[in-house]
Image (cartoon, rainbow, N blue to C red):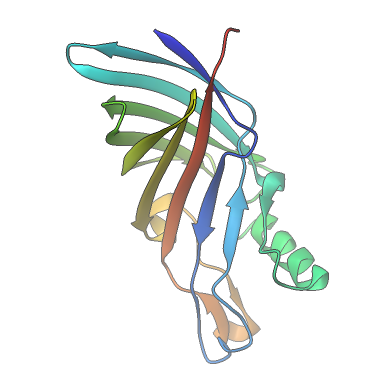
Length: 179
């Protein structure tokens, strides 16, 4: 059994698409979600490699794109935390339990994500690469916002809105841990 700590630069990129008559005023935003610190134990055996990890993503740490004005970033954060979208007042975190099955090169990550108090299942193929003693994991899942219990944002009577589409891109670095 090997124990790993999630690096602070671990993140999930949340790609979204704007639509509507005024989509030219918007853009296709990519949000950045960073989990709280976490560790996981990896077991390697005859049946392959397995691991389970529990993660918490504070809604307050889901960042709007850096390439927009501070005012637009603040508006995006307010909209994202609003009752109609992530309802951060009632649900301040997105909870994730993930189970890995595969090898130390690639495999499948089965995820249960609790968003707005409801659990949703998703799976992503993930590749692993060694980087010295660290392991770098990358994977992608594509689906609908409504698959995650999130109503797509709308503004200006629907002239500016998000499509019911989302792509999650995992970028994780795992470092050996003795604790």
